[in-house]
Length: 377
Image (cartoon, rainbow, N blue to C red; front, top):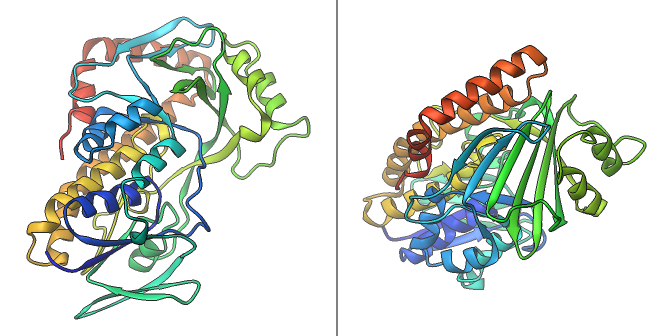
């Protein structure tokens, strides 16, 4: 394929797509709505299906140096007793946890500054026989052979293709924070503790930092409690095992981020003509399997693999969608299901849940891990 592509959205998916397409020799321009490419966010997991792509793009070594490889996942009860322990290994590339800003920076650095522009929010596009014209809020209008909407869960590209609709709230809120390392955190181990309508996760993310996250069943868009968000979390998880309390105490309140757990129902088709979607614009998911960014990274690799040899942009986009829709829909539903189960409140059902989870993970851990982490684009 010869020509130019526009990527709308400079998150992890949009940046990976831009880098992968640039490496494939395709003329690509990324537009990001934020005023600058800033170092924001909290911790995240990048699993072997995605680190394999990062290796092919030549950025894995720097990413590993900034984050922390994962050797074991522990699923626990609030008293600290293990429901299940799963060793992470046996894949060609590692699983790791990293601060989102570090991954974002590692993807930006190899790119020429001339192919990225911030402070450009896409508001609409128009397609004709010659290509696609993307129009931005500041008045910029630019023409290209194709448009990739990587503009997040509230994507303007998706809205124009499929209509405006709100994401679906899944009944619980998520708080994330960053704390310095405290006693009791085992490096290389990540954990999630399941209680009644609440969960707490711990992820070392490298450079002496620990990312934690907490969930709780609640109404959407709630304001912070009068006592302050940090103190409310301390009280909510006071009887849970260490180092949960130590991490909450060590966290600067300004480093706590709150979001509602939301996703969208999978689409049967993503794009039309010279336009397609990528990442959260195509398949937003709750974070319960840590695959949101990973699916976006896979999307990017798939596009970069198909486009150079395609006769037309539209042909490549439809082939890409045919390869990606079923897999991403499966992960969206799996993440939603795990979040639903993890937020159960009935104490008798919780006992059954923990017992059944222990049995399932003990019998088929390799098969279940390989289905997600062993995937190659």
